[in-house]
Image (tube, rainbow, N blue to C red; front, side, top):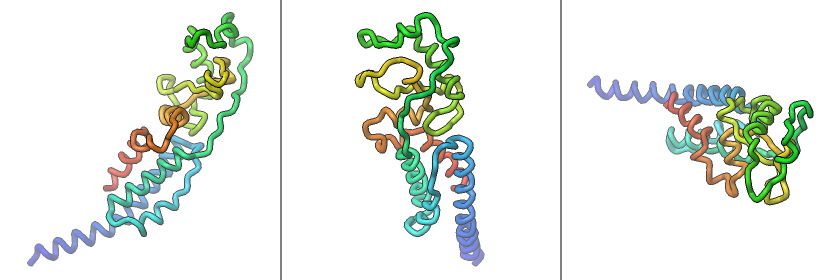
Length: 192
């Protein structure tokens, strides 16, 4: 006799917390994006529409995560020539090594990466994520194939996800393999 009552209370309690859990998840996601990817403009309306369209709790979370990752991937971003740095920061072989010679990477590429990283204030220029030097990727505004060079104005700092998105022919296919996807799954698991 107590078993049916226990099951009813458990189901009722669970349904009461699910709505609250989704609200907590939304709050965590907003904090995550404002701290981690501050330059990404997001539309959070998926939290409302997912309630109407989802057939299960897990589906609701998956819909939210997939939509947010899709917004991150398709965020408008145009590669623009970057500001130059003071000539006093350049080295003797800078200009000579800026031009591609027989498809070889310049010997001073790590020096260029460090200078670009500092110029870009240790942040990804696409999403605004603060980066450690080991997490920063060097991107090119104008590709070598299109006549680009290794001048600092043609180089930009990206995080791992933005680097993959910018370089991909079909970025949408990357969604589930991005770090941001894993981060959002981890956040949602707190409220499952």
